[in-house]
Structure formats: structure tokens, C-alpha cells
Image (cartoon, rainbow, N blue to C red; front, side, top):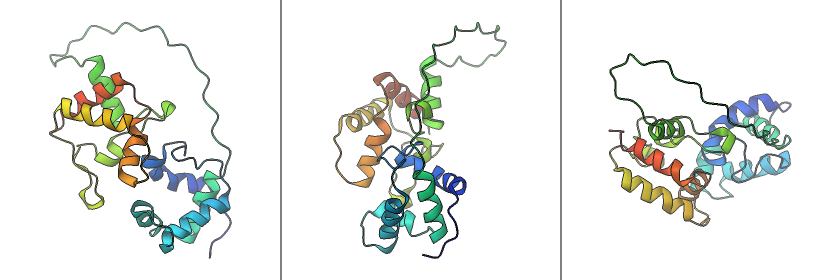
Length: 198
């Protein structure tokens, strides 16, 4: 490999795009805290094609030696410590509204937030990372469009992925990992939001 000294900060910036499958803390599958050499070897094997996984081969094929060294250095750092639990704050009364727009329900707000931003403190990935803010997906890499689906269809699909055991295939496992931290209320809220995407 032709690379300079490892730069974990640069690796963290590169790894931000990995969170769609591996989670924001590198826990799906566990990467954070693994030896740098192990991560480098895995990425090199994906890049050379000696280790097969369509998704990872495509990603690693675009990584330079320096990218691999830096990402490995970032993930090799200590695992994140869980944030201390904080009691919920007392609700602040909302000022009187002068808007004529229809009110947003709590479920609608939750669904929109989970879809667009995720919930990093709970390892919930934003659906938009893969499916796009507009729900149009990424056909070139096999991520389906979900805009236009009914809430019932989306909820049924989310529940199926939530109950699914690991299968060792990138796409279903990525969805299973993404959906696993969601509660039933979360899944319902996301389904309701997705149904608004056209």
C-alpha cells in the first residue's frame, strides 16, 4: 500500500457515508474498536475482489490506499461510550399559532424526523440516506423508490424487516439493521410519512 500516516479525522469524514449500512457509530456490523489492520485487510480484499460482496466491492473499489488507512484508523479508535440517560424535559407550551396551515401531528413530526434525520442517539439511520429525501431511491445501486407507497404497505414491509433474522445478503441485511432499533410507533410514524411522498 502507498499511503502516508493515518489520519483518523479524515477517516471519520469518509466514514460518514458508511453510516447508511454500518450505523453512525460503526456498530452494524461492529467496526468501531476493531484492529486497524483487520479493517484495512477487509477493505483491500473487497477492493481486489478476493472477498465478495457487491456493495462493499463497489465502495472499496473507489477508495484510495490513503482512504483505507484513514477509515481503518477512525474505526480502530475506542468504541463510543453510551450517552447518559437524561430525564425528558418538561414540555414548553407552544405560543399561539397564527398559521392557517394544517397542524402537524406528533406522529407526522416523528416520521418526518426519523425519515430525514434518523435518531443517532438510538442508532436509527435516516431512511433518506439510501432512499433519498424524496423517496425516489437509487436504481443504479438497487435501492428501490418508495414514494407513492401506501402507509399500510410500508408498515408491513418495515415490520417484516424488523422480524427478519440475518441472511448474509447486503440489501436485506442493510434494511434489517436500519429497522431493528425502531419501535412499532416509530415504524408506524415512518410509514405515515412515506405515504406523503409523491
